[in-house]
Amino acid sequence: MTSQLNQPDPENFAGGVIDLPAHGVTVTAEDLKVRLVLAADFGGDLTVDASTVESVGQAVLQLLLAARAETEASGHHFVIQNPSPAFLARIEALGLSDRLGLSQTEELQS
Image (cartoon, rainbow, N blue to C red; front, side):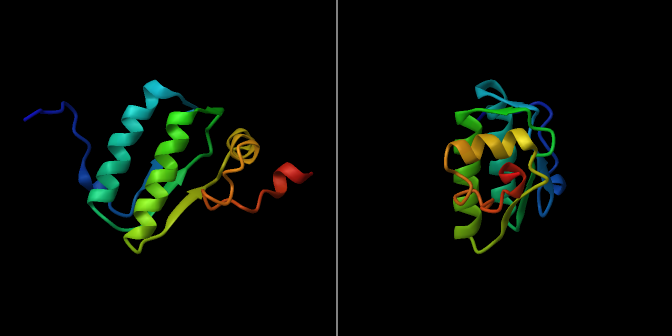
């Protein structure tokens, strides 16, 4: 059995908000994965705040896609709130807006 130092408090995940890092790279994806798994384990709706995202890489996007699929398969809602312009531009460029539930990107059309 492995033990983790500073294990997150489950109360922060059940129905809580997970903040994405400013730079979502492979290194930061591991922490995000832990937080998303804990949120899934405790069930309920999942809200991800993308307001401070300046760049987002493949690993983070894969985790978000998997989290949305898992959350919705469990009968709960997955929401990305306050997506930054950089986040929106990246998912739009990759054609992931619909798959992440952000099909309305008026900010990009101005």
